[in-house]
Length: 350
Length: 229
Image 1 (cartoon, helix red, strand yellow):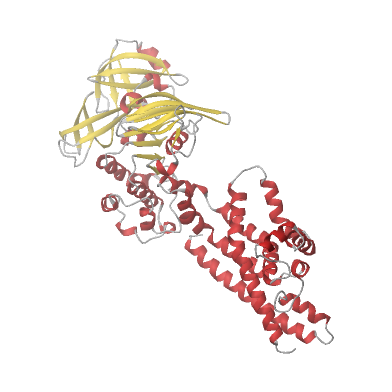
Image 2 (cartoon, helix red, strand yellow):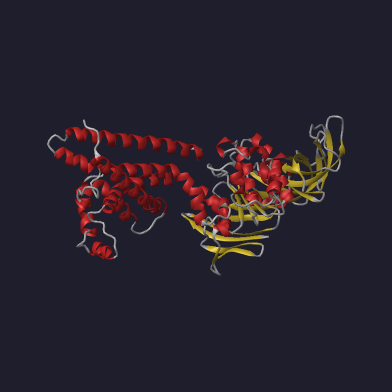
């Protein structure tokens, strides 16, 4: 459990956040300039809050009231920076061992670093550098891992290569992780808790799926980012074309899933902009997935748009429509609709 | 041109000793001043900057005179030091002090530039990995600024070899004690028929300076390659 309460004036910007994060990956999400990096820097001790309290488990790192301010090197935080920050004068092995050699063999094997040990950072690719930075942080035996947009400097292909390493790390080390990102796909794939930051304040925090599907958070989330994240389980092949049937709390969905075995656990994302609503069961449509749903609420979102909160099966979904469509369908709480959804599997489930 | 005689070798040996001692003392002093100027904001920083660079712009004679009135036998500080067995005026150690003071601005500038180029973010990274400040400095900062330290040391050494004005003012020109190579060259110029000796001594000075520069170039290239610069 991490608890963070930080107040800090940075020029004209005011950071004033207060949240708690359970074990697992807590995603700090928000636009650039919303204060994400300042929060992790405060946890690491690289930024001194004007007031507040920061604790990891029972260890208090900072408490302005009690006059506690542990120096950075005694905080036991592993910090993976966006720009890796490997020491250029040391080899990969020298970098890895700089902070200690806890679980060295396990870390090196997990991150696939065996072949890089004698190289200098200048001879590494961006993705390799981040893997080394991650290994270095892990081997220092941290009580918490801070990751500040570790994939932001990588292109989509390299990101796809390194994400599985992060998932393995999350699942094999019982380490709380504070993960800063502004990429919703990354957040939805890795996170279990989400803290949504907006202009230096916490707009909403809670289980990731709830936050992303919460119409109240919708105002802070862009068109692209809002939308439900659901767990799913592959039930079996749907046909000869590689489609599989996946059960989710919202109902069964059919997805492309070549080679996925029954019983595989998945995470699915249904972006709010990828849901169409109909007041009767649509026919003659190419879409595969139509879920019966009930409207829970209608909230104004970005200009000209409304967020429709839906109950589908056991799950809550979020749909973002134009005001005009919402009016045409006469959507109001309680209305029964059919949701035509486009779901994508974004990674293995927890 | 005549081959360098015993007088010349004595002056050369003295010059090398003076320049070496001046550089060795300058290294920690220059590193501290450069670090304060590059990394700290404090009251009096401007003044420190000014004082550290003063020998560069003052006439060397004035620097020598200021040393004399500070460390001379009649001066309070000089007298106190003499009571404790440290005599600088008219001694080779005084020549080393004069050479060190004159070379300090070069040392400070070279190290400060490399400190400003060394990314403090790497030091932050080291701190998060559990390194206490002294370890951060020794294992991250120092290796990164090593080329600058080498450059500063070579400049300081070369400046120490060539120092004339402050030296002759502070410690005079005593054979075997304070008469360094430049002072001997100056003396030879005054002697009737001394031109041939001057030429020989000048070529000697040239050879040493060229060697020092080559060594510095080679060392800093190696150091730069190590930090991947």
